[in-house]
Image 1: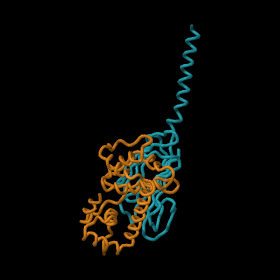
Image 2: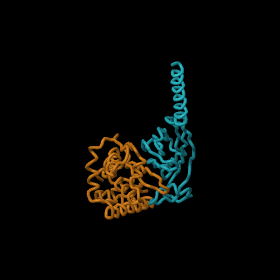
Image 3: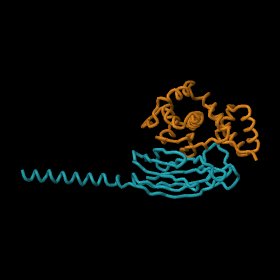
Image 4: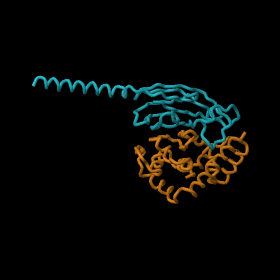
Length: 143
Length: 166
């Protein structure tokens, strides 16, 4: 009787430890978000990383202005200030399968919930004119 | 020096929706601005893509369905999984207002043309609040998703006419 009670207690303890071990890495999982801010213009100039530009537009110059990697835990907000003074705020929410749910706010442009795939880029164009062109915010998450 | 017309004014100009005087004014501005001329060429390209796509792949009632669905779609009702194209565009268009309709139709055409998985861009963008901005969703190279936020309309008199660009 006593041994069976002990066995039940041990099993419960084991289940608790196993549960903690299983839940631990997921809760602690960080994501790395590469944020690149670039300036695209139809004025002639240097053309850096043209692969970041959307197809079908007649851009004559593209310059990388900022590049920053944010390492964020789930629910943690990271931010970055754009050259036009507006902020970019990111908050990873959860990982579902191989996709990351992330809240992204680009001040003066959009608020969005994105389902990002590992290593796949999302680009948001800021509508405000900046130095005869527009700013582009490129996001790429690794998790 | 002539002012450069806003994107929305150019769109209205391209669509032939400006009044006589506004059209002449924008034509002068376009003639004086290589940048505006380039944007106009871009609009022509998008228009061509839309026409080709409508002819090639889109059923005649799709856009009517999108427009009909708009008033019934709550803004927060972003699709959770497996949305149809018209459902997805419904929630997408509404916050951006009427001016976004044409833009997003163009965007739809672009991702329809872009390959085998036309719903991919919509899968990535689960919810979008563009405020007062109009937005196009595009598929870029390397499977990138592009949220193209249009410039706000200019505050001159021609901008009021762009409101008629429904």
